[in-house]
Length: 131
Image (cartoon, rainbow, N blue to C red; front, side, top):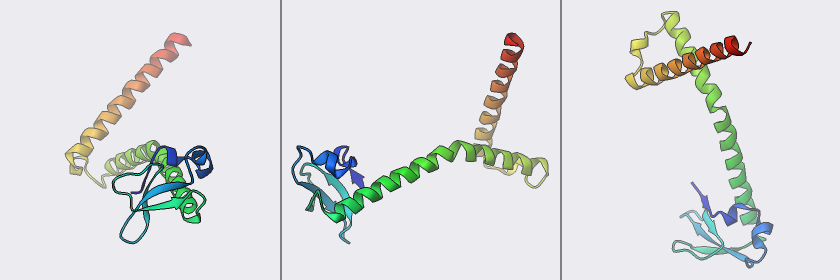
């Protein structure tokens, strides 16, 4: 995956202030940018102007990748719960046996089920105590 320094993660105009007019880049064998830094580094293979269209496209692509990864990560908890419910439904309807699941999957599902049960018990206690 392509890397960008902390400074280069900002927009080119923000980083350009006081940094000079070029960045140092590492490219792969096809010429694609892999890494961008504001100072020279050992594996750099080229330089680019801050105003270059290629750098702007690369930064835009990096920002889009980060945004999409964030979007995926934000749904991870929801999809985990959906999968837990699907496994429970399949077991309840005798479509699969719980013991057919890999041991680590059973352990994780059991841990999560226990944690949810403990949370529900605490919520019930709070309802009674503070109602």
